[in-house]
Length: 177
Image (cartoon, one colour):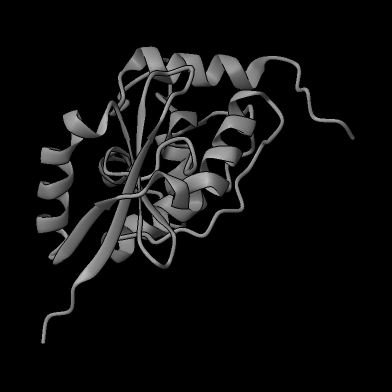
């Protein structure tokens, strides 16, 4: 018997442009760069690919804690997130995404570093693929993964957004100790 997943979505403005947020009753499950109108076809394709029968509803009010934490990140008042999340992907992808969450704020790792960190040193290409499928950019900091030569490579939101995020994290923090 197939059950329906109730997925709410909302939008917020950010220094990297509009963000579309999705959540289930378990937590935040997806962030897309751009407006909901632009992203709904991608979201529906993602739900289908994940074999999720979902009922999508717009409800910005249910995203306040998520929006607050993302805004705090952009204001340099937060270095990590403690949001409930609901990851959908293969076991390997989830392992990579959990590994990405271990990359410290303001630091960058190569794909090879991430592969070594999760115990799969030969899986560099697979790491890149999982990184590219990260459903929660910013919250799961895939922007902190760079080429082994130090170059900015691949970012679903565009290299301009990756550069903005990395530059933000290199600035002196405004977090009070």
